Image 1 (spheres, rainbow, N blue to C red):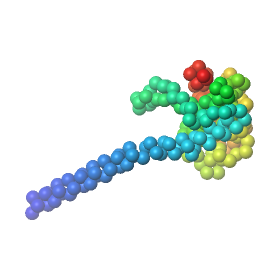
Image 2 (tube, helix red, strand yellow):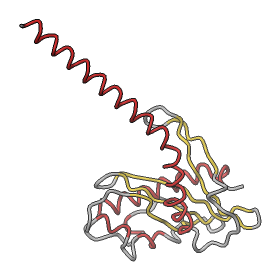
Image 3 (spheres, rainbow, N blue to C red):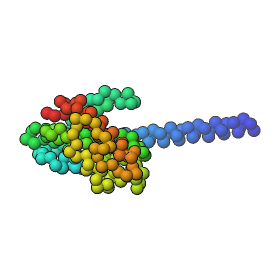
Image 4 (cartoon, rainbow, N blue to C red):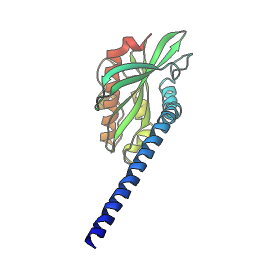
Length: 199
C-alpha cells in the first residue's frame, strides 16, 4: 500500500512537472512571437505621438520616427547591450531637433518621458509623458496637469533643472522629482552624445 501511494505521488509530480514545463515553453514561444509586433505598436502608437508633441514648435520636413538613430550606450543592468533610440527632426537635411526617451523612478514605478531638444537654441523643445504607474489623483495628474509638462519647454540645457525651474504638481512631489530627474538624464545624454545625434 505504501509503495502504491509513493508511486502515485511520483506520477503526480512527474505529470505536474510536464504540464509546467510545457506551459513555460508555450509562454516563452508566444513572448518571442509577439515581442516584435508589440515593440512596433509601442513605437507607432505611443512614442510617435510623443515625438510629434515635443517637436510641435519646431519646423521640420522629415519623419523622425523613420530616421531613428541607434546609439550604443554600453551595457544595461543585466549585462545586455544598451542602445539609445534618438529621433531627429530635420529641415532641409539639417538636424533642428532631437528627441529621446528617458525615465526615472517615481512613486509607483518608472516615469518615462520623451524629451525634445531644440538644437539651435540649446533648449528643451518639449516634454511628453510616455508611461507611468503613478497614484491616481496625485502623480497620475502628470498626464493632465495643464502647467507641469508644458513648463519644461524652453528651459536651457546648460545646467541641471531643479524643482524651482518648473511648475511642480502639488501633492505629487515624488512624481515631479522623477520627471525632473528623467529630463536631467536626457540633458546629460544629449550633451555627451550630441555629435552622434546631430548630423
